[in-house]
Image 1 (cartoon, helix red, strand yellow):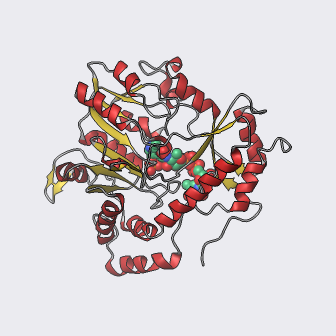
Image 2 (cartoon, helix red, strand yellow):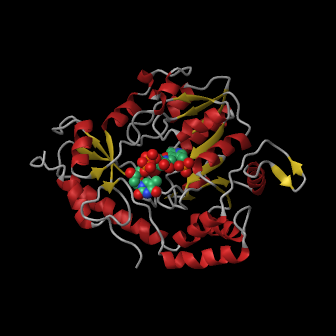
Length: 377
Ligand code: T4K
């Protein structure tokens, strides 16, 4: 076995990437070395697209070098203009992708329970310049897909989901990735399913996928025709090979996460002032993160607890603090007033994501929970 648990004195990070056994990756590498096909729609790229369509239950996937390039390309593919309404409570890549397309992010507040975009707030922020809505299914919990689609339909807006956290998540109708015009996935090392770096766009039809595939390959439609100012965002054969090997273990990994999630909830329920995030309407969840919120009746503030956990070697993360519009470069954008997002602000001030990964052992989990004990404090 080539995998090792972290040593006793190593910190417990917010995540530890899932890796397939090395011996299962070697045959793929040997094949790459034999064929010298390293990138540009190689056989493993094609196999992974097909395997992911199958696993996720969607029809059209375009693989990307990372999730951020997938987001940037999705906006370009839909020819968005002007303003795009999005969430302040996300990783900065969500809004950065808008700026890369010369679009103006308009941040509106989230629902206090789901922490996903609130359709009513979205509707109230629409102007003649609005071209799209960019919600995030934050922590892998589905946004209000029906409410958001109603608003998009009523106002003729595009709807693009940043589904970076959503690998394998399903609602009652199937994959969460089927909603909206496009959905974007991230396969970064820190995600439930990783290809070291990687990402994808899920498209509703073959023509949308075709345009996206042109855009991720410099805009080439064929050997002699460039149809748009595309970028190089292709996933290479090494990444695709890792993905194929990972896929064989993904169900076991998600099951392990589910067990860890249930155990945290059981153990933390006894601690006043610590609230676990529980909003999901998902039929199948992926347990990508384990966010907790530090309430007023906990003896320490969020930041005091955060640093106390660090002293105990527990490297949780304050995802998503600060809010995107609170970053210096976003502060001066039009319509950017921090008081407009009380729910997002409240969550950002209280959240800590605890270590969550499939190989997190029970002893390590006990170490995490023990650090919340008033006697330890
Ligand atoms: N949209 C959303 C909603 C996203 O959350 C993200 C990415 C994106 C779009 C963009 O997708 P990508 O372009 O990344 O595919 C991390 C990730 O870099 C980022 O992918 C992720 N969201 C974000 C939420 O978290 P950091 O800066 O917090 O990661 P880092 O390097 O501090 O890693 C966290 C911990 O994980 C480390 O303390 C240790 C462990 N780790 C990390 C890496 C990279 C490992 O053990 N091994 C590793 O290789 O951003």
